[in-house]
Length: 275
Image 1 (cartoon, rainbow, N blue to C red):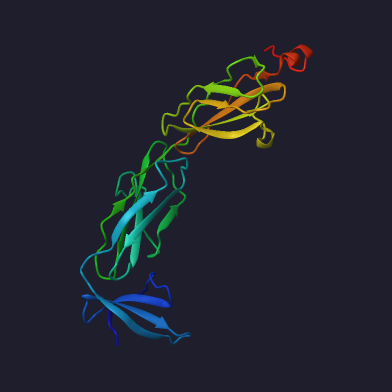
Image 2 (image 1 turned 180 degrees about the horizontal axis):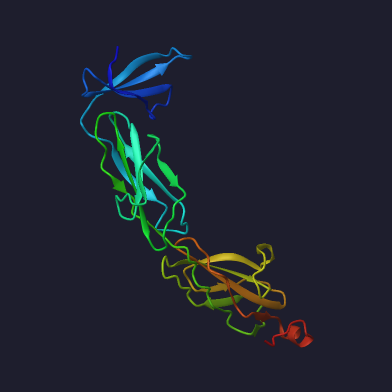
């Protein structure tokens, strides 16, 4: 009979059957990993290998939150990796705080010993505050591992300001190209990380399917040139939105419109350029 100083715990490392990890009372310097086979209520249990106990707890290799910024004030998510090459992980806990290793938001909380991520909901997070996930793990005999923390994620719920867009002219006879510039949007917390621009024939932003030129990213550039067009006589408007580091979009900025047509279009009254 195998006498254990800790109960059997199921190992997540088996790719076939079910493996269990425990410690013998006769020699606590060894960790036994056993394999259960058979069906019903009487499986056959056999020791498949025993590894020496070196007195080392598991190692939490890293903890990652979801980037530098979040727009949520009620939810946080993290992933992590734990290494235990000799025996098995028997317990894991995480905490959330306003400093690395802190527990002032969520105290140490147990998760499944094979878990590699957690989403914590029902929080009351503050704008501008940085939050850190911390994780620790243990095996059957050793104490808890060292605590490892994420690099922190800060709450930003305010979108950037709307860009002010200039389409460069009142009218043009060139039906093959359009150009626009805009003032840089501002975001005092997470900053502006991207602009998108589109073109249409409405002074208000139309549905996507009605756009003449669909939404296009310019990265952090504050101008947009498009060539190779074949525009019909009409007034065209540029729409520009800015995104901040938390993924929030600004209200769209809209240009005052540029009339496109040939001189014949203007003389025949097909387009009007008085604004």
